[in-house]
Amino acid sequence: MKIFAVNGSPNTKKGMTHILMETFLEGAREAGAEVETVFLQKKKIQYCIGCYKCWVTTPGVCVHKDDMPELLEKLRGADYLVIGTPLYVDGMTAQTKTFLDRMIPLSDPHFEFVDGHYRHPRRYGENPPGVVLVSVCGFYERDNFGGLIDHMERMCRNMQSRFVGAVVRPSSYIFTLEEILAEPIKEIKEAARRAGRELIEKGTLSPQVLDDVARDYLPKKAFLGGSNDFWDRCIKAGKFLNL
Image (cartoon, rainbow, N blue to C red; front, side, top):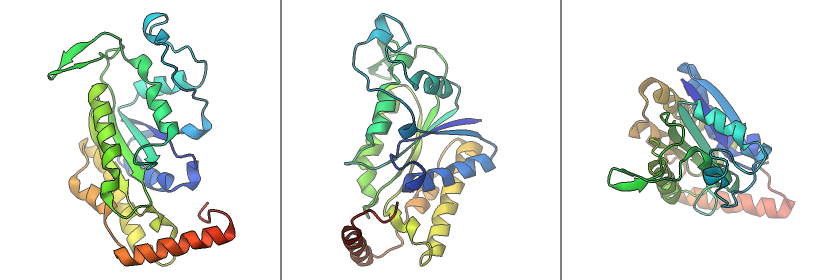
């Protein structure tokens, strides 16, 4: 079982996205998966310019000469695509969106009628990989991920891929408080590993394991006071202290 994972955080290994995503992927490896991770920030991926040459002039081949063709080949050989992104303005990062936009060469421009809706057929005919979203945010409430998850579900329907589920962690800066919240962090990480194992062993992500990853550990008032104190310290120091 092959997983191709793309991390769209501009902070690469320094970010909370990496902590959650790598823990999830550890579980997948434990279950026997072959995993390859790419940090999109480190790749040269130009914006889609909407020229449609990959559809009508050089079918399946983009006009840009960058790293994207290599990534598309890795994607085509994967059983699962794991997309990691922090929540930015209720959605994904620019790096993640650019990667997804540039997947258009995998589609054929013609239409077909699928489950009562017009879709583009896949150019190469193989079964598309299942898609897992891994995301973090600094907000307290889990429902902040609603727009991003809806986007991913719609994208998967349009590309005729299976959306497996979303492994999300609100109030993700809890990962930086290991000295005082060691046990809750241990529980969150074990739940993320369990989710990775479930993906490979069952092909699904249970509601229980996703709830365990996203579980509240801090009272709302404590979260509010601690968060504002943290940002006051960042402002005083003139830098973001967690990087």
